[in-house]
Length: 81
Image (cartoon, rainbow, N blue to C red):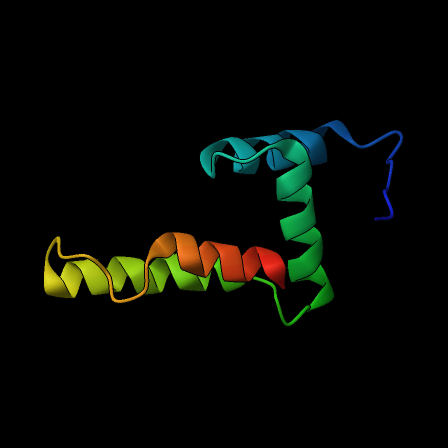
C-alpha cells in the first residue's frame, strides 16, 4: 500500500487533526486518512460512522437487545472493502 509523508505541517493543522483523532479515539494516521477521504469525496467517506449510527439507532429503538447484524460482522465487512 502506498504511503505519504508530510513535512512542515502547519502547527494549527496538526493541533486540529490531533484533537479530532483524540476525540474519536483514533491514531493521527487513521484520522488523517478519514479526513483525506472526506475531502476527496470518496464514496466510502463516513461509511463506518453511518454503520455505527445505524447500530446505535437500532439499540435505542429496541433497547439493549442484540442487534440483528452483529457489529463485528459489519466492521469486518467494512475492513474487507
